[in-house]
Length: 92
Image 1 (cartoon, one colour):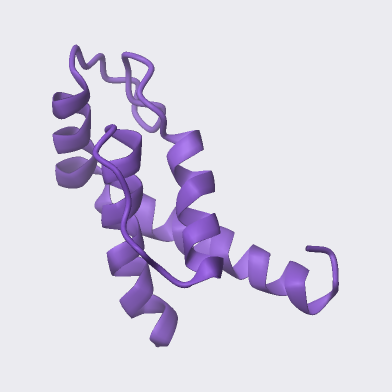
Image 2 (cartoon, rainbow, N blue to C red):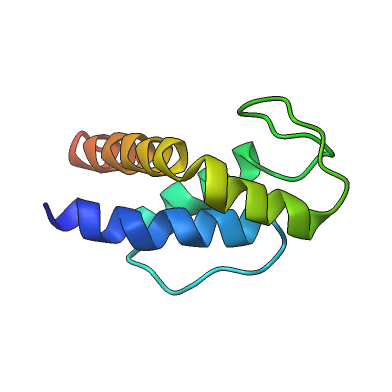
């Protein structure tokens, strides 16, 4: 359950980073997952999750936080678990 609390903070941080609004201090594993998620969600004029065209970074940030919070949360959980497993196996 601990990861769920961090996932809530991490999805907000990923949305902020993807929308060009900066990040927050998180544990290294979550920070890496947020960084990877924000690279995947980087603003390029349209949403990579649904394809909707968005003209501004602010609009993109609002779209991510209002429409895709659960998807972002799931993405970060998946990435952080993968990073944790990689560390346990000595891959990272």
